[in-house]
Image: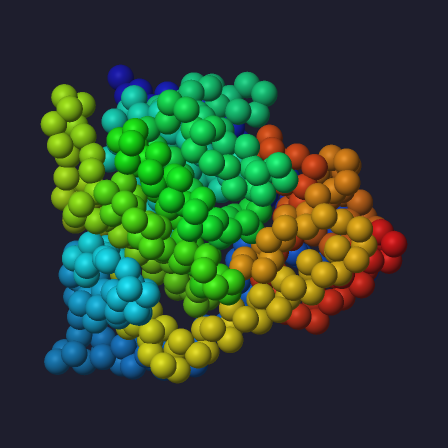
Length: 409
Ligand code: PLP
């Protein structure tokens, strides 16, 4: 008899974006003349930059000729891309990462989700609350949690992110965890972690023989000098951390798909019998067995992000989103709402002043025709907040803020 993975039965439905979509659709159907502005989405809105498009076109042309055609890509990504990543994202910042520790992939979501295959089933997982749901759900699927009664999975360690800790919890809350998922700049709160804060996590992980999974998908939004762009800026991180990066938000690749993971050769890990495990070798094995590479035109497109034109053009793209974020934050603060994020992140995390997340969401939908994301959908500690995204055209952002101001002032 075929039996399915019973751990899937523990998963709570993917309720958040389904419910947001349902409520927005219902409102639009009941009010056909209303023009909704969607400020909830985590997807980019601007097209790929010219340097990327020309590189992709050239690569597509190469695929049309026998002499320049490319079949399967090398397992870890083409050398030209890994070299560019290595030089620009690490060497230029004085960070000690070698090229053979970089694994090109088709998305940080897939990498983050797949990486947990390397953990034993008994590992205890810690996540931030509110949290990017992929960290949680992939571990539920793998049987590392119990059921979810009352909004939290049994067996997970939830790290409260709130105003009392500046939305950056320290390791003292992670008692008993073997693995922690950290994400900075954070989705959904937009918070960033300082070197000192990350150092505490690295020291904790090295002391406890734990592992840090550092999701830096929003690294390109960091503008404040001194905020680390990579976990490997922190002494000791090469022994205890894996890093995930993506071209999705950096360069508008959400529909193009390219990302990479860094797994240092020096990262310490142990087999269930206590003998040393080689995590990089294990990831190599997993990657080469289950993944067949990112297409040549996409890797050429990603390489072009690192060209001088690509760097200038993608920085301008991100600057545009950050300008939107600054407008959102300033205008909402002027309405008396407490906000964080938006300065080094495309997300603004807005306290709803004692109103529950869904009621505030409904009010903005009904009275301002603006769609946001209720914070409670990201975890218990997200209650009393909404997330607003800066991924939009600036005229739409201004229009949304004008409408919200009329409702709240
Ligand atoms: N990590 C975080 C924190 C994200 O918010 C997202 C996308 O929203 C991803 C990873 C997914 O990145 P990718 O598009 O590379 O799969």
